[in-house]
Length: 159
Image (cartoon, rainbow, N blue to C red; front, top):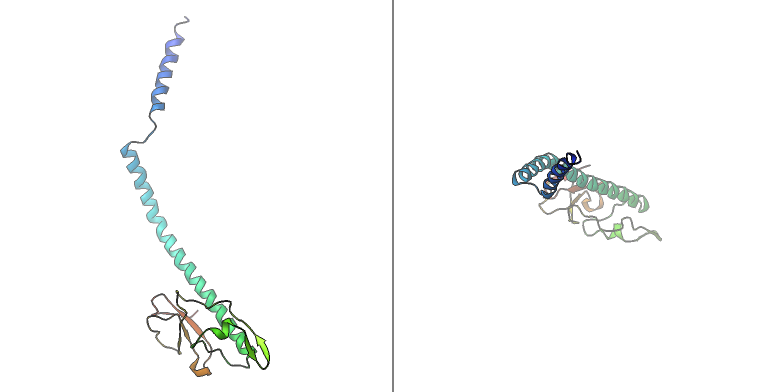
């Protein structure tokens, strides 16, 4: 009777040893896992690209809103005149003097629209290919409205 339980324990012990020796996946199992991951990635990737585009657009929208607010503040401080952004951004990024008082700087640094800081003068114009901003200056008699262009410069963002 003492010998009966012993072989059962040995068989279970041998079975457990065989299961523990096999640690890796077979080639078929790996291919199945990779295929499932690829299918999941095809569903997730468009969401990430859309989120990136939306984030980029929101950054530019906030930047344009801030520039417009600062141009309006410049107008208030300078008797209704608008800054000449066609030549440079200095009137917005450096302190200015109007009637003996110092104002600004209105922006901490030169803004960039898709890595371009250049400004085209005009209203209702098609910007050239390499343009960062379109600004209605018209020799100082414009409205002071500013728009950003997309990366190619062919489309205006008129938020």
